Length: 348
Image (cartoon, rainbow, N blue to C red; front, side):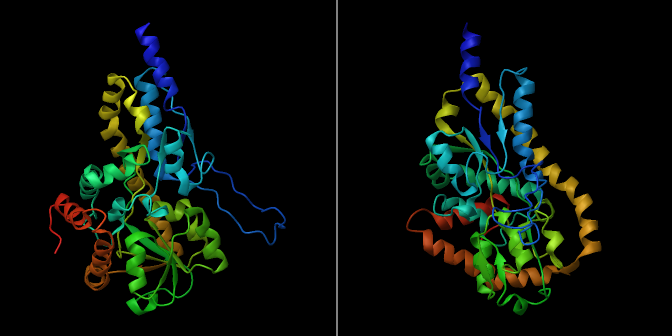
């Protein structure tokens, strides 16, 4: 009887989950009122960024012999990408992937992970920095306001830009370009004279294709290819590595709190396996993507010296502006310093 009660509790939780990218999404070739010739073209999406949640669902079913089933809904089947935290708050679903740059006003402290040129250039540093930030009281509290708690990250790789037109080989070449870049990366690009926009990932293909967007920053290389941006682009940067962002997997806290202790322990036990699977997925897709991109597009190589110049000229200015904007609301400087300390370095 006790086992049946536990299974009932589990069945009531983790039944619905929403993630923002579908491995098997179908193409939409026309919009209402448009002919096939004039309608914007939308790409089919193949996304390694959901491996964390796919692995979570698989391991839960495997380790509980099917007693714990997680139904994953991709794309915007249950909620708009910018409203996943709202869905968690009202109990529309129990788990979601949320991207901090889609709604900075909802998670201002977590926006520290969008700051340009943070020391997250290796997988190990990325794990340490994100884990430290997730544990900071300001981040815990802001997610608690939505009835949410962070479980793990999707460990987005360093970003690079991809776009159409004249390749940006100098800092001056960014002036006047409209670029998809959110958070601190967008702030840094604005300091270079570009115009940042925080368009959702699914809007970028059409924006670049139709010329309303010159370039887009995405986690490199998986996201550019997942959203088929390379099909409508002429060039990409390599080595610029302006920073990253964060799309963590979050739980509805009241649902998590209601779980039997053994299932909470299970979630803790499988976390490393989930993290490793997600990171390996990015490595595996790079093996395929990088040669293809080098063959089909113009590669704009940024040397370490060029990157250091960007960090000094615009990176620190963007970080200091973010600190000044948020310090009265939470310990923004402390969060930045924590991120650097977790990576084994200091913010100066």
